[in-house]
Image (cartoon, rainbow over all chains, first blue to last red; front, side):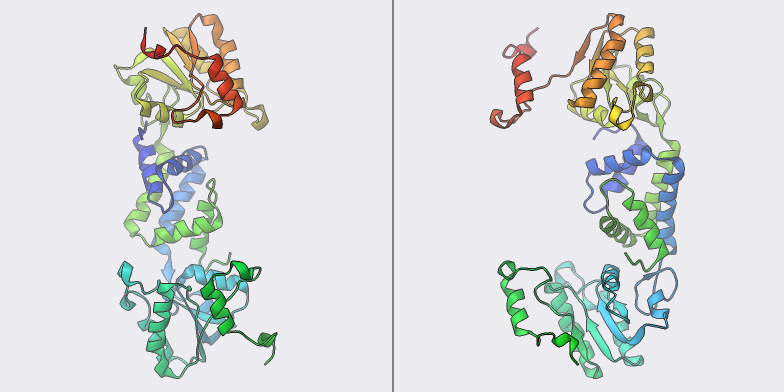
Length: 205
Length: 205
């Protein structure tokens, strides 16, 4: 593209580095910002600079946090003995939105993926093992994505954690609410039959 | 969404203000930036701040520029007597990319749109009239979008400029290259028949 201004070109190139943003979209975003007040645009810029400079990762669960220990790990109401292991901070947000989980988290920071060169040592797995070894834990819930990398990580975590005599569970896989049987794939449907539960069983103790 | 960090939430909110970017996309972009080096992210932020602080609009054609007068208006090779009137800087870039135009531009900064409350006084129309009145002009090319606002603006510009005895042209409307007749809409096809040109006529003087 022929830019009439170097400043414009620089800003477009910065936006175009973002995932899923091409040169045309980037130009549209930059021209949108140019139509805003100076105050607003410089607030945007400063927010980005502060974001990276000041953000921390919780020293217990590795979730993104404003403090050294995150608000979930410090909350007195949360069950510290139930640890939900997730891939990243988006999963924490998704589970928090359900209002169904009152334990604490452990964010791995990714999944084992030999294809992308991500091995166990690149993730916060040692710190999870350390945490299980040194603090009282009643249950470890492995809430990982249902794909190749998730299954690999699940398998590896189980191998590392099984000697601690702590119950290890995974989230249920099956037909989603609102899902129709005929459109479900064979693997999901097959596993949901194999792992069937008593009717209303989840509400009976 | 339940954010684990205020800094994260602020950054997501800033991105979510951009057109076409929702909260989920904004979160994806912010987490992408968090995975980058501090240097890179603060460069992004500073580029945005500089963009709005330092960018100028050319005092002749109103195009976005790094200087008081843009590089097209100052270029000795451009025909200053042929003015192409466009809506915004994107149109200048699009026409420059064709390498078919060697005159100069006049950026209106929008189109007349009573629905959006944009009238002639909100655009750089007076400065165009002024420019035609005070400098020698051989031709005015109106290169505006082929929609209601474009046609309204075209009509208004013609009314303001017709007394100057300067030839006013508009860009050709018709079937795009690679376009198939059967899929063309009736208005485009109808106008392209009415405004038909001699075969290879565009190459014969």
